[in-house]
Length: 207
Length: 207
DNA sequence: TCCAGGACTGAGCAAGCGCTTAGGGCTGTG
DNA sequence: CACAGCCCTAAGCGCTTGCTCAGTCCTGGA
Image (tube, rainbow over all chains, first blue to last red; front, side, top):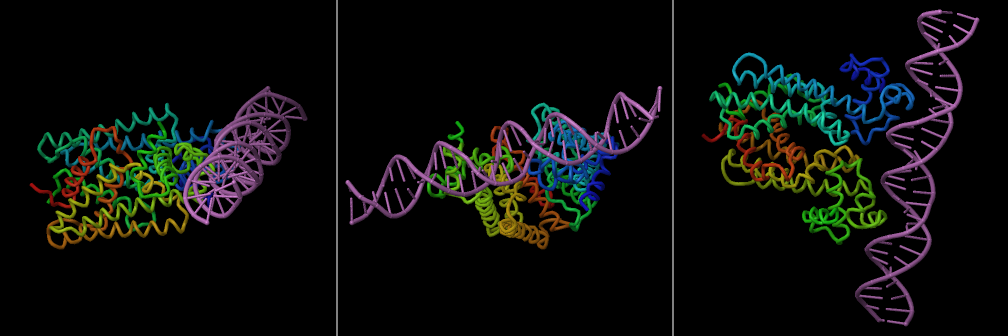
């Protein structure tokens, strides 16, 4: 059962090779999301992947490296989603709706990965944290530019652009904390609801 | 230095007696918020409080009990804040503004305590968790009633009352994650900004 | 058939963990 | 002064942790 769920989680990590490394990262995502990084043991990760504890160290140098790989991949995906929305055609309102819908629903759909990348930052080494912080700043900047565009064009009514950006990002990120697959909302529904709420926040809700 | 900051944090826990127990809970809040529950050692807590590791066990049965005490106290404070706003005079918009302003600014002002009570729930024992979950449901219900009242009265435009309640609560809670005392916003400013954004979310922003 | 090389395991090390215990030094009361 | 009761420490127990290492198995080219 544990192994099956690990395989399922590994679907997100299909490009990781070899197979054993992929199973390990899938198992780590599952375990870190469930218990937290510090409460997860290397024995638990290896066990979920169907291997002995020592096997982990053939593919990853340390437990922290596993967290780092998960964190980089996750942040790159999140950044890509934001970049796609920011680079789309249309009004600022269109782009904001698209960005929030995609960003929030990703945090629901991939809530295990998202939980790790958002709430285990302090467990990263200093060098790794610096690298991740850079990706986070880029994501923030893309969203801020959309909101700034809307404010400049008179589409939005925003008193504090950086503050509003922070709030919108915060709202989407926190989806990873409360979302569960067995809840009554699908990821798409969360994205749709959140897009609507955010357009209200910037004073641009369609009638 | 460590001891001084522990004393400062203990100001929030002034009613805890005797003095040693108060210093310990202050030290625990500081340490849990900084490193997380699982990454904090009992030796670290005792050290910050200026005591030997064994002294902790005279005042608290386990490390988890310390977390539980912090969690109960914190949740009771948060509930009290929400209850005060919900029971106030005025329109639903007035009460919502008041609730969000107080709730968000509390999560900023007391971001160390808030971080623990919001992000370390899984470290609680099953019985303790059940108790805390009850307090959380009560807080949620109070906010939902404000939003429902506004929707019923036609003050708000809300398509999904439980979903919007969840989003508002989530937005306020997440303040504890990103807020730092050395940032450019004071807790009051965060409360003011957030109240404004939330009134936009429910389609009731003042002109 | 042989053997090189990568994947993997069983056993276990040093360090650190939560927590316990035996005992010492205060303080207030008689 | 005697001493009970509380608060606290030094020492350390039993266990788990992240990680290592010697050696086994398997695969594929010569």
